[in-house]
Amino acid sequence: MLANRRTAAAIGAVALAGALLSAGPAQADSTSPSPAASAKSAPKGDGAKAICKRLPKTESRVNAAVTRLNGDATVAGSIARLEQRVTEAKKAGHTEIQTYLNDRLTFRKNLLPTLQKRQEDLKGVSTWCSAQGSK
Image (cartoon, rainbow, N blue to C red):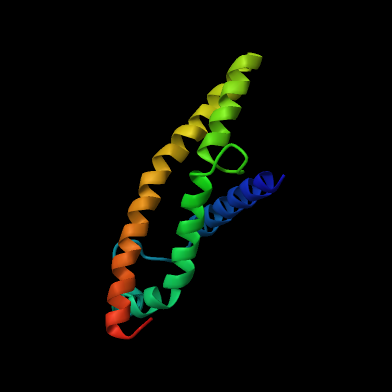
């Protein structure tokens, strides 16, 4: 039920973003941005201070996601649980459900190395922030 709400919320957010992006001002000159507009939108730094500030929460979220994905079949959102669901769909002869779940399983299996790499990267960021006195 929560996953359905999240999916609906994500779809709504994407639809809203698309509507906002497509509804640009009618008088906008698309050939070149004004100098003032481009100066305002240009980054003034690399955002290191903000990254260091958010680091504990970011680490916590990434660690929780990796733990969940590596969980056993009793953990909602784990790879093992989704593998079990694919197997059960295959046994029941639900080909379309099996295909859908198998695609989700492929995504999760590909997500795990990305999150593990992010964990390693965050360790380096944590070291850097500590050396800067930002953490």
